[in-house]
Length: 190
Image (cartoon, rainbow, N blue to C red):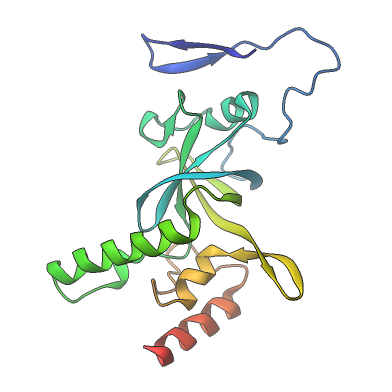
């Protein structure tokens, strides 16, 4: 069910089946629009840089709805993956000690992120950036503690761990005070 990969355009073309009673969009995905935020569940398939990663969507129909409007470099139709740039963090932009230190910092940050996220199921709160034709978002991972399961904000965790400063270039985060507190704790622990 689904469609076919068009070699000429390099895109997957979805064909809706005519089955009644079949849920064609189990994730509740909506076509990306600048003003609409949406919550998606997927798996971290690869981490391409310290502030962006690839999310794999298991359901082809939901993936194709989400991939509409994304540029070719921000999606992989064959693997059902799309790139998400993390909001409010920029580990490489946080480093000002020279080229060699930046390379070491990038390797260290990638190693920490891969250990925390590679292959893990996550929830992503997405925003579509129409100009760059990509998704930006906040990533959440389910963790288990004595109090029971809860969601960990990975963007906030990166600031708390000292992997990045809190970046306000896209506006303040809804949890602005938590980010500021995490940054203060990270600075005290360094």
